[in-house]
Length: 398
Figure 1: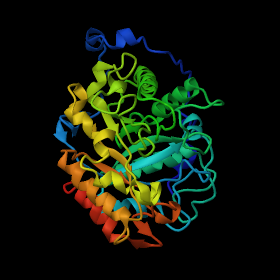
Figure 2: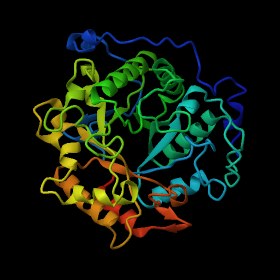
Figure 3: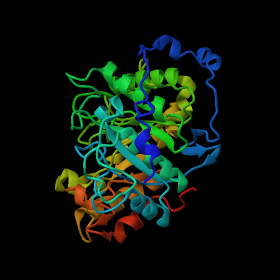
Figure 4: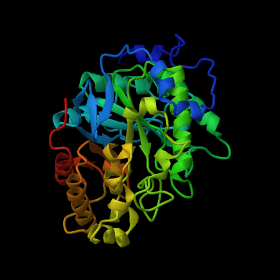
């Protein structure tokens, strides 16, 4: 047991809270390159993350991600699921041994808003943790242990009120409350060397358009950078649901072909001074999640993924060279199944388009994802899924 994680709250360091002022950006100003040239945040970090020509760069060198999701902090447990049998070290050591270099950590709005929130009593196997400890200290521990193994962490805002909501806010949790929660979280963790990227909102879906969503993303990013300019990581922007795509799976909102309305919209991601820190994130799910009917997406002359995000590479805008990082993909992928056929077709198409940044398998522990399974199922490694991760990212960076 490492007492520092228990006593941070007593020292008043756990919550990361201070007086936070949230403001709406002046979009006309944010689209002015002169403004951004004059606005130069300090760069204290030894690790600078940027993007260029469809690649993620760590200190100007390409960084290829082989990642996996470790879910649970967004659940009622408020901790990674499975810690009644295994430890954080078990999961991270597995990643290190199998050359995974990045972890996606889903969290809830409630966690971001209150880092003193006590975790559940479901961590009995890990003696470095205890039920009831502040969730901020748990996240600190995961970041610290990840960094020791040279594993970088992406945090996403996964749920509000226990649900993957269609919009970034709800009737009871306003947009300003969501932005404040993000700023609160980043004040505590934005300078941590393991935190290399944040995903503004998991799986927007329903009626929300790309224009509406990217306007929200711009507000979040603007307020984070005003409060934590030292953050030198990436901003991951999800797609939306469009033309039958997976939730968060498409950037074709509003128009289905070559016009990407969202990112080029005047009130969208027009923060031009940060444009080399944006990463686009479509989620990809096959038949075990979305039903047998979606197998057609893999067998069209022009696969459906072309209209979901592949069209970006043919556009005339900056986004033709955007990084595509799939932060969720995965299914049962059983031998002879349409699910495996779907993913094999997608992998061939995706790599053939030149998308080599990598991605994150959903999820780690198969017992806690009823429609996908995981890399580890009932204590046994799924060799096919690990091999699939290897083929998506054959040369992960370290």
